[in-house]
Amino acid sequence: MTSSSITLVIPGRNTALTLHACLKAVVPYLGSGLLREIMYVDDGSTDQSSAIAAAYPARVLDAGGLGPGGARNVGWKAASTDLVWFIDADCVARPGALEALQAHLRAPAVGGAGGSYANEVPGSLLGTLIHAEIVARHRRMPTHVGYLATYNVLYRRSVLESLGGFDEVSFNAAGKPGAEDIDLAYRASAAGWILHFEPRSLVGHYHPTKLLPYLKTQRRHGFWRVALHLKHRKQGGGDDYSGPVDHAQPFVGIAAVLATPLAIGERFRPLMIGLWAVLLALQLPMMLRLLSIERGPRALVYAPLGAIRAVWRGFGMCAGVVARMLRLAGSVR
Image (cartoon, rainbow, N blue to C red; front, top):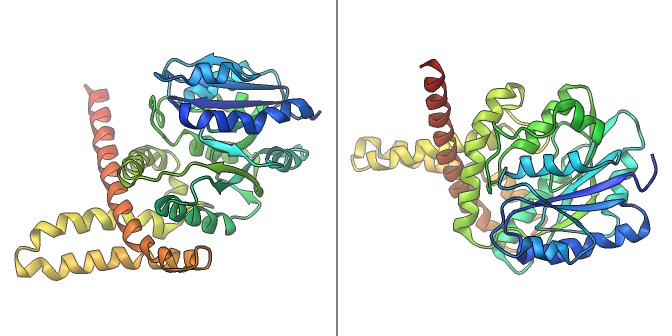
């Protein structure tokens, strides 16, 4: 495996605000011989994303709105290299990011290796809390994992070919984050490939800075997780990134919301108070871990933020269950 046997695939939709920084950071890899090619796969943008990418030494492909999984499939299928590096268009590769991942793929049994995040929005309270939580979770991840996301991951092309790439139907929709990357990692692990996590491989991420868009994204994550965990039932209770406490929170959140109107009557008021108290209590272990990373009172905001997020994820899961029932009902007719 030569150092130039790597293609970088960057999927994107309306990414004009971050694409310059993303591409500027990875172009030097072409000159160093680490990358053979950079591909930007435009997934139906209505802004200047394609024009921005065309101004760089990058090959621009058009996915036409297939969704992130479909866009990544367009990219890796057009690649001729042994390895494919995926990063997102709102990520900025730090020096050494690719080298750190490539080192793991020298072992033939390792099918993929993923890295971690740096924070591109340190002045944002929301962005900083999101980042601190990710760091806390990544610190507990072992080297050998069964979970990898595609914001910064290097896969063997043979793995992608053998698995049929990313699922474009079950966990993926145009312009929306899905769960197709997690599904791919689960399938790769189940097929016997070793997956590695490398915390020294960093890409800076433009974390959300506004609460409502962030919550809407969390609702979509909840929606797709229904199909994901119905397919991969062994991971329903947790994986290397999240555990049973995390997966229980949306259910508690929805129960708390449903109990709130009933609290008009005194009979159900203790139930409502108890459910909200449990939901907040479930945030405490992570909040305490965040205090060691993000020192100061800002970390205390995580508890209410985590509770609100759990409710929105719960909303998404409810919508996912309804969609699943309608799909099953339609298949019976």
